[in-house]
Length: 326
Ligand code: AMP
Ligand code: TRP
Image 1 (cartoon, rainbow, N blue to C red):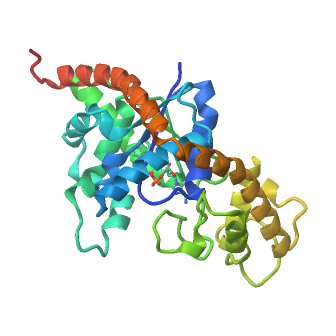
Image 2 (tube, helix red, strand yellow):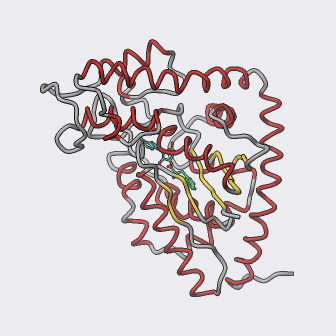
Image 3 (cartoon, helix red, strand yellow):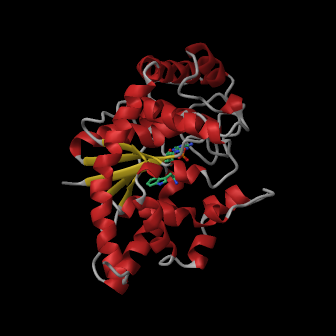
């Protein structure tokens, strides 16, 4: 059976880019594959954070993942730090990855530049990500475009480990959607939409009420010639709306242009599609949020199932790399 693995950080609120770039694929892949999904709380420690906030974001992110349609009966859903194999395997990955490879990672450059404190964990972050993926003999990793480089590095690490120490890990590949793989900020269409609080008007949160979503989309930056076509270079703002509309309605951005000639119509159609897409997710989230004990029970069960797979792979890796077993 095809094994799928992916992860999302519990830092800040879930935004539309997470949903269109990754979570939609997670949901559709849980039935065709043997899917494992993870709230990667250890990755959230790489940047300054508040301890209580992290704990509550971790639980509410698990609830959000169930609200978007992940079903703990049909996939394994768990929290990274509950399966200690991740941290241990990360060390093996750090010793297999080259310093120069990690230094080339653009996410590290973006997140470290201009910051007063840069943790060593932020630098070795992709080695932990490789451990996450490789522990589950993963074939496919559904992610947004920004993660392509990390998945490439994971492949290189797996290939290197296998050639040095014998066949140990499955070499995974990234699965990136045709629309929505890189949702841009509505106010700054040259940078990706992100959870960070820097651009609240440019970011649509999954829990934004319908009127807020409508307002943000209506105020989205476009350009001055009222012509609707898809061209990321020449028309970044309009193309972003077309990508969002396409991803929300199961079309490519070019197909999403069909029948739309004016910016006003494009914005109305996009707002309506996003509101309808998120309405059931929001309803389900608020129901689940009422019962944190049930969520905790489900993710504890998920961790047990994940540990079974991860511990088998880690034993193999420990053996092959030369650690003494008693
Ligand atoms: P993160 O919130 O950084 O843990 O990301 C979780 C998933 O959402 C990853 O697969 C990212 O690639 C994806 N993602 C985050 N932001 C965007 C975006 N603006 N457009 C498309 N995918 C995104
Ligand atoms: N680095 C990913 C992000 O920023 C999150 C992540 C951690 C992940 N481990 C993973 C994604 C394993 C896919 C597979 O979005």
